[in-house]
Amino acid sequence: LFARWTGGDTFGGGDSMYVVMRDELTGELVGGPPSYKPKLQPVEESPFAGCCYDHSRHSCPCYMAKQNFTSDGKECNWIDKSSGMRFNLMCKVGNGVMDIVAEPRWYLFAGQEDGNVMDFDSEPWDATCEAEGTGTADTGLDMAQWDLKAGRYRLIFHPREDGVAFDAFYLAGPGVEPP
Image (cartoon, rainbow, N blue to C red; front, side):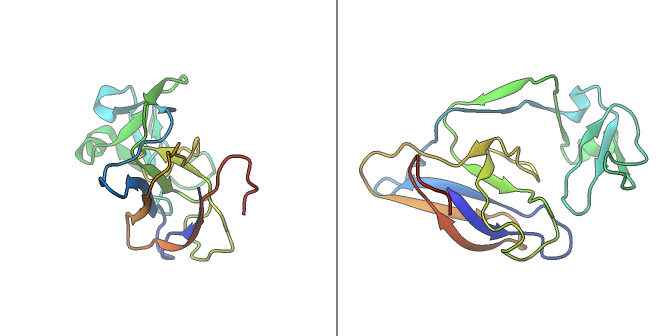
């Protein structure tokens, strides 16, 4: 699946959408093939001191100690552990620890490279996403895919915020050229 979409509504980024496949007759979700994603833990169960909130992408990467600047040199809007607990901040466990997603029920498309661009030419086709993602940026480790038997299906796009603009999708089988 390739999606032509954008998000960010020119004020803050992090807009995102979920994609699901449903069986037309039963309405049941059709799961995708198994996948992996970085394991997350609540900040209160982690060794992290807090996170740096990025207003343009609505992300908050966790750090062991208070930061004044982000890794790309921007001023850090520090959120300490106790404040992060109030909004259920999740931090990566790290060291390559992963969770298996046995049969992804949805795919999250989120966190385009430039969070404040509202045009389709900047990032014309997005193929990477996260299986059963819930964050403000997807891992980019997955491609939305399903092994479908003969039948009728509905591909459904659910915008998660009001800044999402959806233009088109391209669904093709293995070995087909991208758009």
